[in-house]
Image (cartoon, rainbow, N blue to C red; front, side, top):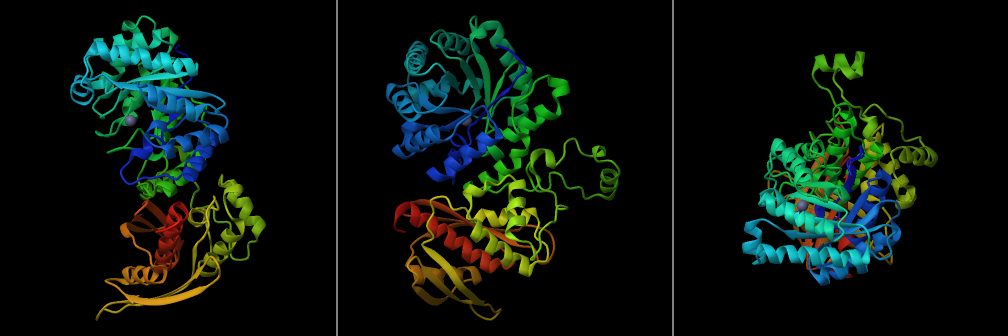
Length: 509
Ligand SMILES: [Zn+2]
């Protein structure tokens, strides 16, 4: 099975969510899965249903609601896990059970405490059980790149014999080097007798910064499925950035002679969505989706690009759906129609936002900042999705007084869901601390602020500041985000955003 198509397997919702500090809600997961379907990935790994009832429920919702891609659920090679995966996936249009089992000596001896014969038996039993539920079964020998290769060949052959249709080679700890990984994938064709009955997949991690390189090396060795996550989120240094693999294949199809079915212009919207819902910011110089990825600052480069773009660009911002700073179209006289048309151009699904609120926020920004460009619009959208989300508290007023002699003071006025108005004031170590203390006095909230960051959305002194925060409450970790030309206002709204998310989730803080 070695045709020219590379299948894209997105694991943002499973391995990606295993990043420290990321916790997607069920609604977040459905929203991301819908965007992945628009991106036209081939497989969405929606979760690991045996880990919690919440994860099972999220996978089941995606299986019911998201059509197009295959929906996969992860399971250890143990009966309860496989039953849970099937329970979650049974309503999917095209379900896949992904069975994994560790094969490296270090994992077998220390984590599983089993010998090789037992491990092969577990793999056989797991794949056979999954095969009883679905025809589409993937098998992964975890930590394959550090396993004895003869043993990997043996277990792959056994898994295929039991009906596995995809066999995945994970570089679980990000240890492989590209040449060696190409050779390893090639060697599977020579050493696994029934390999023609399955597709080879690769799953790399970025511990040495080589996840994309190793994934492409895998494709060059004959792999026809690549696993990864949007923005490369995931444990430690993360998973393969799937957008990098997709655009490498698109840009260097001359060398590789392979293709994907991905709708590239949905990459940037997918990146922004995952950034927003994960709270994990994309670095400016990130390939493909970073804000500087298509900006030229040296004079020679700018001159070259103006004369002919291809002089310094191997792909265009538009091809990955990234808005360019030049596309300034809206001002304060623009109407709702102009706004909604522009949002649709940006790939934003109007169903997922509250257009009235977005319009009010847009007018507010446009009043203070002459021109509102695409980056501003995306920042506004970040705060105003309407997904099953009640605003328990809304901000009516924030006022701060700061000084270099003493502590700043903040006054806030908030409105609750019944329209009651509350006002209070507090001091703090800095203006943001003062605001948060005042908000806590009004709401009686108990939580810890674990992350706070502010960055400018566009250039210039009147740029919007985008504030991203994370709070920990008794019930979990919640991200909040807001943008405003005044960073203290943005900080206040980001905090209220996070609190409202927490209140929606737990019913109490
Ligand atoms: Zn992984």
